[in-house]
Image (cartoon, rainbow, N blue to C red; front, side):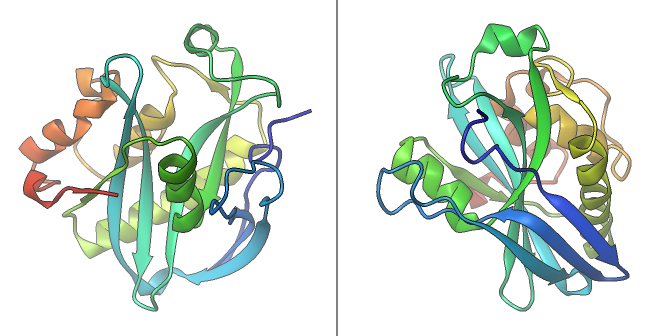
Length: 214
């Protein structure tokens, strides 16, 4: 039995600027009860209303060098939408670094509401969650969103493998971003992802003084 929360996969239906996300995660984390608050919804978004995008960094083992990273898109109508690359594990499994290193997990793209993904990590896992607004052109925000939307069905409908070095939560989004921005194919901050904001700060994509811990 697949782990709750990763037992369904997001599916995208797009027509012009209208984007419908099926199996959008919207769990509630007001209490520490993993199963009872499961909630998957279908929601529509208008990509012409895209306004900004933020990078979230959640440092964890080992020694806070590695981090889970995800993006949150913000719309002028007040909506927000998060995207994260995750492993699909069995219910009894916890994340195993060595299994991920050996390509032992399926990689999936999950779209979330902010209250779900942030609430899970702050209220339940007690992890640090740090937000960095990205300073990129409006046209680039739209291209990044479009490419991530396009990639979602491609990854989720195929047996794409999660691999610590080549295809993890950071590199998967990085490689999509490389189609828009002049980023190198490899950089040490992709492996020690807690330091990714420092590198993006040098590129002018992030202003490090704007960080906010949630």
